[in-house]
Image (cartoon, rainbow, N blue to C red; front, side, top):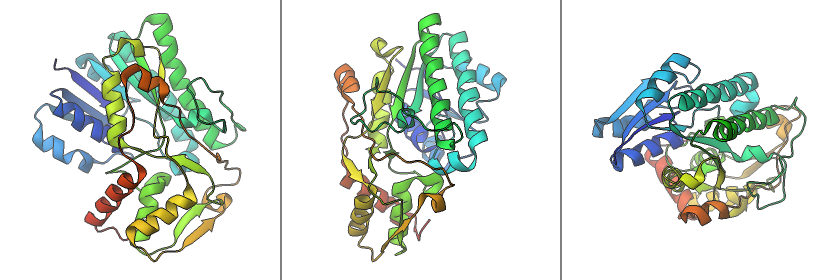
Length: 328
């Protein structure tokens, strides 16, 4: 059955891949993006190939525009948000207000027109909780409200609470998806995205900059697998009012990641360690480990990642080479 999807933030890295998948599946897609971090070139291919695609430049803070677009669409995927550690640290007020008010506008419109909505959240929700693997019911462990990173975590928590309470009290068909380090083609090295940044440094034979001691671990999930999770959850009523982790469970330290990138690119780069207070601002806090438990999603729809880290790195390296990358 053909439906019309609205993707907020759809000119971004994840949104553009989701738009392509939905169009390939025969749906109509409307993308709303203010292009603050999204890029029109991410949409060039689908704009040329699919007459059922439409791009609207605008903000989720524009209540009238959001109202009109939600009214004409049947499913809403809310991806628009301030993204990346660097942006969150450098522009905390913009990040906080955009994430909270933007979600409020979108969720209210979805309720007004009784639309299905999937809301993208983040592993930042868990804060400093290192009791991995992290289940959806895990406690949030946060630091001071004066630290910008925890303000971002709190803003996304408010987004989730909006989704949960609108479902419980007003019957909104909402689902929250918590993303853990999504990577793949079209991801910008800007805003602190670690893999594209390290790959471009390696290809330019520049030192790979590793923040802190590099022993902090992360898991990286290919954007195709993340898009598959969204696609599978859309038509499952049992997902309404629920939250799901989406990410890989293949854990690696940032230092080992840098060494692997040097090996896979054949680079002669060295590794340079940068203290957090030099990379960001005084008071920055990082997490030693962040690994998702994705059993809830697997049990509901059978989802699991299909790309391993070596495949992800090969693809990111190939794209950077095709773009003539010479460093970030």
